[in-house]
Length: 423
Ligand code: GUN
Ligand code: FE
Image 1 (tube, protein in one colour):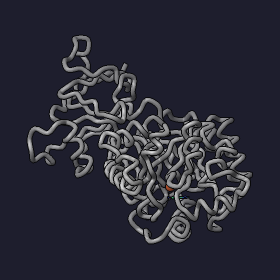
Image 2: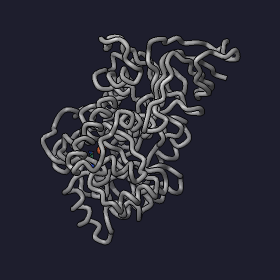
Image 3: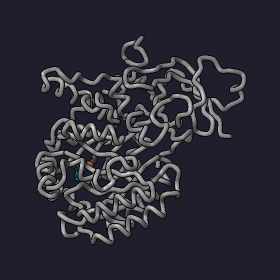
Image 4: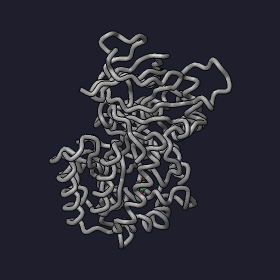
């Protein structure tokens, strides 16, 4: 049995309403899972290897529920357009480069290194349409020790000619990846990834839904991010009641576990369908600002019982740092509060932290919290250079790290109890 004890100030959010903190306590980890948190070390744990992080804060690793690996070189660039022209002008040309495996390897190694650096221990990732470079990305994540779902993008219409897949090839390539990777690693798995309804024919959507159900594979896509996009989907699928129904009709909306990114312009009926089908919403506040998309009313989704996680959405988003995105989420919710005549309450710090850890982590299983039985995915935070006042509570120190800290304050990262070295 692998066993370990870590000593430090422990903080996590079992529920979004409040933090659970344990000052100067011991976390007991067996086979990568949390078995106990205690103030005094019981005799039965005394011979476990002890890592002493006294004064430091131990928190769950961050979870990024939606990002585009091949858009990594574009981050911070090309942010002067809305979604559709942004895709055509900046995004598709960059994604077209990933039939080159050397280029893919160079970019993907930088991406994985930065994810490690900023404390993201699990991520849900779009690659490009390219089969071989998607496999490379899967293998590189496996090698890194970080957890991930990774999907080859499917699109067979309304895209650049160099990214237009033949429908049959798109399906066959996807199935090949599913078969090869579904049991290869317990931490890194494939996910079915229709880019979004406008770039997928009905035949493609139908076949992807069948693959999801037949192989029991999760699904990710985009939903209601931009006003022109929503109008376009109405034109392309006139029979469909709304955007969400397009995915639902094709078994791509919670028939297996599903993430939809953005969700800014959903109707109440769509939000209720998400709640009913257990579909996750990935909130991408910086991407939504950069592409002038809008503000997702996160509170409304939480009130209706939808699972929500946070996401960088690189390169619509400019930052991979989930702490930035937690702050951005809380800030966005304050604008929603103003814009709804103070109807939808702003998110609290504990709610923001929850969304960036357990909210997204639950997509992976028992991840993102330190309750008993949870995977020990953790960060050791050394905030000594941030503290100019003594006597802050653990929660206040953590809030300061989230708002003004960075990767220099992360000492160590763990996934399922294994310390992850710099990839
Ligand atoms: N909708 C379809 N493709 C994309 C993408 O690459 N980024 C974002 N933000 N939205 C999309
Ligand atoms: Fe996206």
